[in-house]
Amino acid sequence: MPFEQLLEQIRYEGAYPTRERAEEVAHAVLAALGEQLTGDERVDLAACLPVEAALTLTAQIPATRLCTGWEFVRDLAARTGGTPATARWDTGAVLTAVARLAGPGLLDRILTQLPAGYALLFGRAELIQAA
Image 1: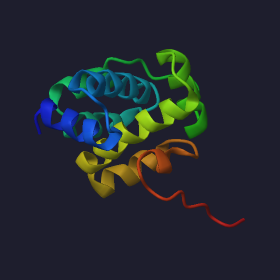
Image 2: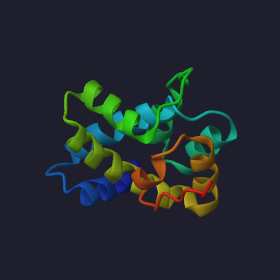
Image 3: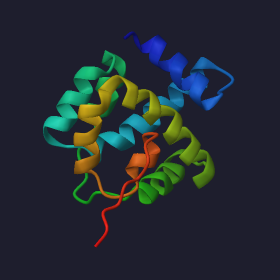
């Protein structure tokens, strides 16, 4: 898929007024996600993305401590100067488009690697096992 097509999906999902705004959001969210993913999941996700998006994802050094979904959103808000509500909206718009490209198998692997709270960000129900 060309990067422009991914941006159009993100623009539609997020109801952004311009393609430029969708691109800003895409790069911010993918950079933050790149800090959270490691190993085969990171490599396999990059292979599913358009080159420009893959470069943004893989240019990040993985963090030493993984964030929960809420911490991810809060950190993104701080980085972009937005509010947690707008960061949550932006994250959902980008990660739902990314989830479609990744497919259910890879998305399952990614969600297994990440702490709680990411499933909703990718547009999936958060399933929690009973104790």
